[in-house]
Amino acid sequence: MEDVFRKYAIALFDSVPSYIYWDLLSLFCIGTLVLCCSLRVKRGLLWSMFLLLVEFLFLILSSTVFFRPHSSWEHNLTPFWSYTAFLDGEKELLVDNLFNVAVFIPIGILLSVIMKKAKWWQVILIGLTLSVTIEALQFFFKQGFTEFDDVMHNTFGCLIGVGVFTLISSIWKVAKKKRVHL
Image (tube, rainbow, N blue to C red; front, top):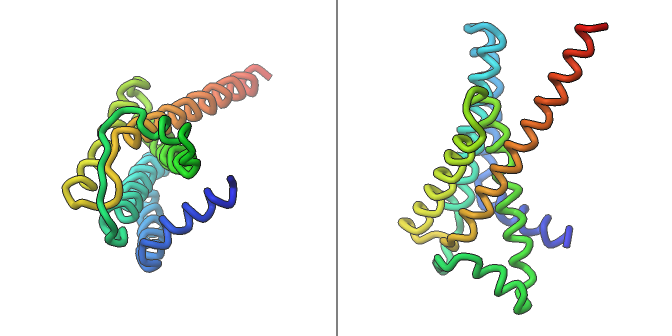
């Protein structure tokens, strides 16, 4: 299973030209440096997280829409169809579903960092909107496989990201209180 997941991820990321990765890395490093020098460090880091989110979304769009090799385009808007197909023997769908969950975990974390005052459901709603946008672009440009299940998995990944952020924040607050009381 791990080998299948690794091959899937490599194929997806190999579709994006390497100069895109280097350009985004350079932009992030230079942008973070400029933001932290021109603003207070804490505010600069917050803006650099926003920059990282934008770059991550651009990478997702690059691999799913902009630089995706032209193949036959399909769509299936039937909810939970991939689970039925998986139970019927299409085992590679499990990897696809898990990858769609995993790719949106960082988005949930980054949105939570950027929007600290937002309620968890607002962050999830933004994650849902981003996922629907990606699927709509795939549908419009006839790239890849447009499906409702991807939106569901992406949104679940965003929810996991929000949960990870909430857990880490809670642990951080408890540790901070213990240091103050010592």
